[in-house]
Image 1 (tube, rainbow, N blue to C red):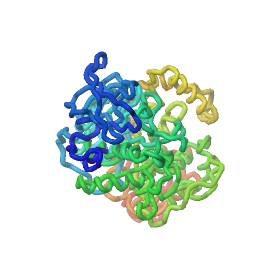
Image 2 (cartoon, rainbow, N blue to C red):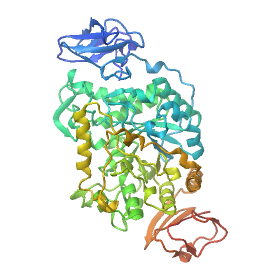
Image 3 (cartoon, helix red, strand yellow):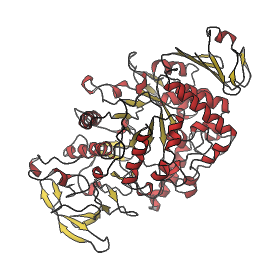
Image 4 (cartoon, one colour):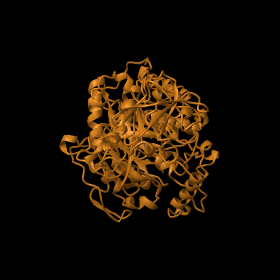
Length: 599
């Protein structure tokens, strides 16, 4: 968040000098005796004393855009600016000034209202194309528009260690990961998506910083042992000097929305953001983004990833909630996965109940105050019956559910095309907000594995060994019918094997699946799947009903009699994934097939 010149510490200074990562490069460093600005060549930098303004330090004069710089704190350094907008390629210590807000946009398009109920598409820039860049991804945007995608969700793009990774161990929240491109490339990506009528949301990690390349503690009390997270000490959100820490995190969100032009944010694992303040960080962020939306004159959407199974996440702040617009619902994925694959290992054990899918489509969460055998305690809370179901995001695949399997394999490796088609129909005909994961729409068999590139051999080895320990108790040998060797996250081959195989689209099987997805998305956007009624299980048949459509999936390999199910459908169009359009209502349906009926 840019500093306010009306603050007593900065009275008389123009606002543009106080922008993050440019101008006078403001640095919060309380209790430090001397902060020096290092400018120019990293080998022989020029050293200039910073000017102290209370707990902040500023350069004596504004730096031109493109200036290479770093900080020296009480004789230690160099250290990167925590709010730097660009890093010097190949360096985790040296950064460059940049005013992102000055980059010109070429599109004035904006979404109509919140991004709920629209078709989302999650992608990872590094593996979405062979080149792994924003510019290469721009070339694929017409394809996504033709598919019917309405919102693209980018996996994290903030600076993280090495040359490849998922991005969830970011260390430079305000800066763009160099291998993906430049800030101008990111603006161009968003503009071109907007020109095609596609909104763009960004995955932002506010629950922790990565361990490698993280220098925040050199400046100020950003972290506190008061709250422990899976990654170590949590952010100092509710202790002494927590105000600037909260501003730092909220500022990263505002910078993406205001400077780059993103239409929304997906906030990673918010259940790990531990804050005992009267106003939780998420609630404060919600209020700030609401104010920003009013200021910019365009809608902005906040979506949380939360495993708490609690509607408080999407309840208004003035009603005691956190004020998120939407949240991911893993229960939808888990119940679909178990119903279609039969896997009940690990956390899937909670969803072995044959009625799990029906309950979730009716009540949103399976565990809504009930006992979770996986967690060993009661979990979740009921969702109000009148709460809009499009506040909850459903998916058959995403980066976590594919990438956190031992081999990074997709459902397409296990399920027949007819059952894959059924998963797609249950997501796209649902009352929830549907999200696809890159390549799922053509039934891609390209794997998405967990990959990293830590230069520190100790951290790299720890990641490899930790991955093996994590999977040791998951019964993967039962899933894969034999002993499994988990790919090394540090190996280059693990990353390369995760690249999306676009050449699959030349094959008949994948073309057919892509056509099916396009058809489903078009029907959804036309309102055919509006007004959800029920999802029921009848032995090995799953039946989803809306006011104008019906989806029947035969999970069994044998054909099934469905004459009684169709008796209530007077007129309609019948599509079998396997057989195509049918001229008359079928008395039976093939094994492992999906039947779509709409009027």
